[in-house]
Amino acid sequence: MNIGETVAASLSSPVLNTIANDMSKMQVLTTVDESDIEMISIGETSSFRVEAHPDRKFSGIVSQIRLASVSSQNMIN
Image (cartoon, rainbow, N blue to C red; front, side):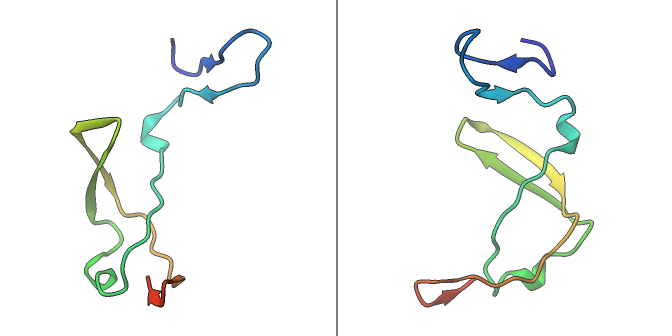
């Protein structure tokens, strides 16, 4: 597979996934507990892991913070 190539199960099937051209443009959207949000600021470096690569740490930069609380099981996040 090459960057930008479409991945499909067969020639007649719908597109399953398209490989990203530029991984630096990827975004991670997450929810942060309201008690922790004051510790995060725009421009700060961050890191995260994914189940598909448990031994690899990915890094990024906080580009925006949106104040939109979500209530779940009587807890506000």
